[in-house]
Length: 570
Image (cartoon, rainbow, N blue to C red):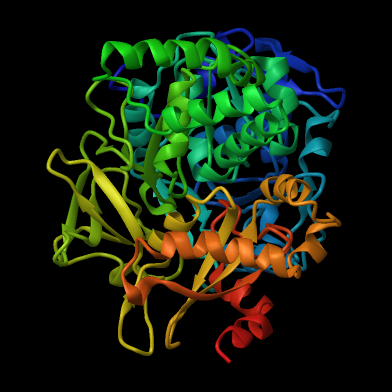
């Protein structure tokens, strides 16, 4: 891919001149290819829509997609090529955040997915399906003008884990500098298959879709993670992107499957699991290579088949991935590469590479070319505030000049709000969000993400939420792994009912307490979890407890469990 690859026009031309680059999932689970003629017909219909709107360069249009679909990609790229600023909102955000976005952005039109609730706005709201079914079509040659690289391309509203979402203003060059760098790093050959199931409003997924098109990979748009298991079998992809929670659930499903096998298989799998979680692709002694071959061919071959059989690699972002999960995937022959970024940086800042020596488990990789990363005000362990500078860094926050100024240093570095360290080879490790780090009332600093990752190492714990701000000691909300707990209950001849009731069982509470005590023994006293409350429902998008990137919204969780949390400190 040429270093001069700069614009949305190039992506549209690739789609118009290459057959069957996009595949759409149908209601029956099959996939329909979009030919060059299909792309052209869709663009004609969407151009007619923009002409009828009397859209002019500089206008804003709000898109609220659900899952990624060919129609969303084409409307997004076409609007940008015409000089419009594309405002992206998440379908999972809910009525109030979307209404806030629409009122602040004042777009000339709003285009939504079929499932979006009615918005309390005066702007006309259009349904994408209606636009694509429109009979009003102007069949003219598509314009191929390239927008000014420094002009506004898009406004992406952050997930708003602390208050109202902010609109991040990105230029064409911001985004395309990221696309150029990522395109060169992807382990993807022309016409290999990619599965896309994350929301299109997820900036990581959107940028990667641009990169897939640039590499002429075949992109299969699943539209939802709900269909993931089925679509992996149907599509048999070579590559996809994911958030860590999805890989953790895949890993748990495999563990759960083997836990139901006979005694010999269970013991073999436990041995394989211990080996895989310490797996290193290089530096093994000969006997370990033989063990690795046995594990991959016999014990983990079924896991690869569940992933479609062709999977080469997965790129992970948005949150911390536990190293042992990544190692387990690596042991099965699937390369996992973790990266780091945010909406304000278009989004990728660092990523572990696929080449030997440019990957380190437990880190989020090396900076992309042209991007500077520094850690300021480090503590005695080298952990400090992460700041970034480069062509991918945003213009600023929409209609928020004060917050924009506060987000940059005097020498032009963007303050990410994350805490981490750079190791001796320049790999970045993320410790926490600076705003999430808190002091107990005893004056001791606590990094909740660090502790949460520590306790998730227990196979008894599916999720945990660390508490203690302005409290005398650390406590937690704990979601047990109910598949593990159910198997244990049967072994203990303990009557199993449902998670809602099992969390109140004294023996269950004692077992989880023992698991927590075991992990507490590895921590200094001020970081130990002194008390906990078992919850039976995972944090979710629907409840408002997770952002659309599956990050916990602390304020909402604290509100929802206020009574239970107060009980922990009595």
